[in-house]
Length: 159
Image (cartoon, rainbow, N blue to C red; front, top):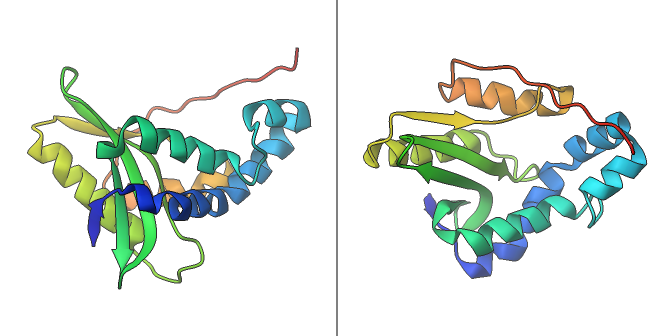
């Protein structure tokens, strides 16, 4: 079941986010080094994603949905709608890595893409990394029908 975010969901979704992004944080630290990783993740690798999710919940709770199975939160998805440019964007999203269920991401993507269609939007987009830690996300987006891409690289330099 997909439902709107409620304030009482915050601690659970922050925990899911922190656990779901652990391999991405580990990869980022390996690639960028401690100095840049520490600056990018001021709450630490194990808490920074949850804090980012907290900000999204506070700033746009209407664009934050929860996936529940048998009354338990098993995932979340955040998104943005840009009516003037006629697109919707999937932002942060994750399934609980320890829940043992398959297809949570696909349920959430389907619900959000249907919402975008109902809003009259013309296309959807999502951003993810090209590194090994984002490979599961890339496969999930492709399964959800995202079939076109522009590749991108971001360079970093310590100052």
